[in-house]
Length: 390
Image (cartoon, rainbow, N blue to C red; front, top):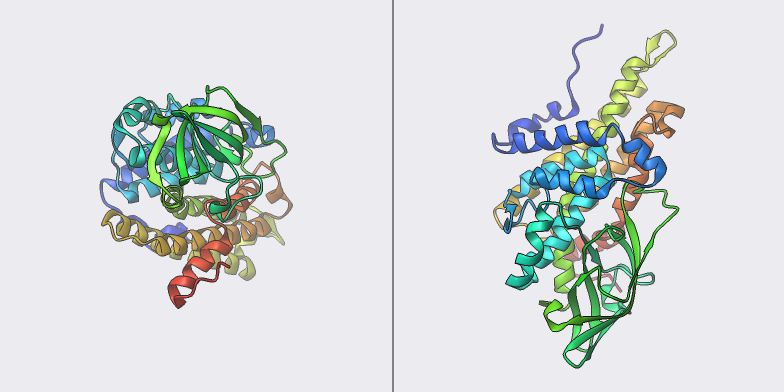
């Protein structure tokens, strides 16, 4: 006997945990994804390109760029509202959520937190509107998890700073108007606000990606890029870039679960429609076991995400807790993507369904903003009091 279906989130009454103010924000993001992203994202993925500038303007008009920041055209949304938007965007595609994360949590956050008033006034309103696009350059070809080993260097020449070196895996890099570039100096690690029209910047598009294909990714070569003293941000040391990364990691906690939810919903629908042995495959016990296990994982992940969001809104969220969230959400999402693919069978490897696209994207999400291994060690240090990084 077939009874009415409920969604995985209904098992946990997730909507009851959200306020009357939070649900409409989520719903606006969901409508944007349904209307703008879903119709074309498979072709963006196949072509390896997406209309990033058009997407940014649309997202800006909805108040979703730098939405958790205050002033300068930013709506000062709550952490929960920002997380819910990230979840809906990544249910469309990780590349779209990455656009928003890099724009708001990395580039805009760095300017908002460490920039001068002149820098904020010059850049943030246009970035909030999506008229200007930002990127964030920290990783290098040979330097990832340990940014203190950066080779890119800035030397003082008179009153100017001259930057030289290479930066890798720069999201939004091919379309950016400004990039926050982190470098080593004789004074330690410093950040610079670098207009991309500055002489000496070579932008090379990263080609042949199998993941995040609907995202603009660049390699930057800085060939004696000369900047005035006023381009330097106020923060010193690794605290600057790591605080920005923590903001982006928070968005991933919700975002990765959006990709997972989309995979699970695809598997649920497919299982009810696919008939084998004269019955839908959703009627078989092994298929139901897969669907139940995925739903429990997804619901537990969402409960954790909301708890961390409430902590962030109250100013109590600790970096170790962000690592727990990022670790759990990415693991959960990849597990669900892979298991959903088994339900879809061979159909699951095509772009007719979103599952393989999400699975490929999530391999990047697992790695960026701190690898699974690094977040494991962060949590391990918190539990034992012993740093095992070296």
